[in-house]
Image (cartoon, rainbow, N blue to C red; front, top):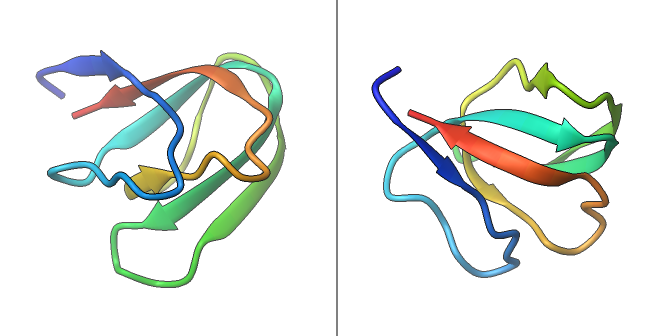
Length: 72
């Protein structure tokens, strides 16, 4: 990775390119996978976790985790 950026959850915005995701505060995370598939919910993601996939969006609806960072 060569960069990182704080994430603002949104039901309409997408990232310019796929990113990995770091979760700072425990909760559920709803993402759109980079392969264009249907949205996926990662339930109960612990603080300090990296999600094991590349994503193009973090949805606001039903995402309870916070302090997320895009890694690219």
